[in-house]
Figure 1: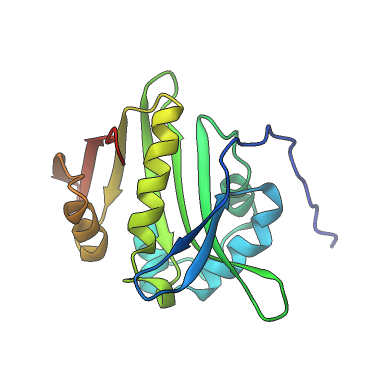
Figure 2 (figure 1 turned 60 degrees about the vertical axis):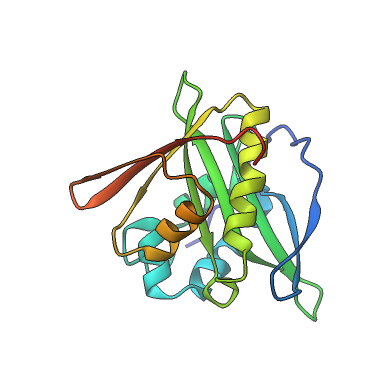
Length: 187
């Protein structure tokens, strides 16, 4: 069976890639996601623990479905935007360490937000840095509020949002926290 590969032409983002210094001194590159990142998304999810994957996707994925990888890699850089933090392997190939994204709720200034970081790079400040950078991008694109759903067991994410001062409204419903907050002006 031949596996179809498909890319969709999308406008380029005006986001300037940058180098980020993590708490431990590790340098990572931050740039917008691009369609060609699909294989790197598969690798990143494969490098995550079952727990991290479950907290991000609310499902125990053994492998990210191709259609999901495609949907996550192809964005319009306005209503759907994603940043990736990457490093380079000794071979020179790129590796995704973390992803932060938003998806605008159609016709509103509200966007659903999500972040995931490969386990070995958690607790180094990467998730918070990606969220702060994403918030700046969102503001530039007219997003005024973020919303997300977090499992109560995901204390790392809840702690990160508290530390950033971003939990303004959290409602426990159906076994998950439904959280919303205004995107800070000076994220």
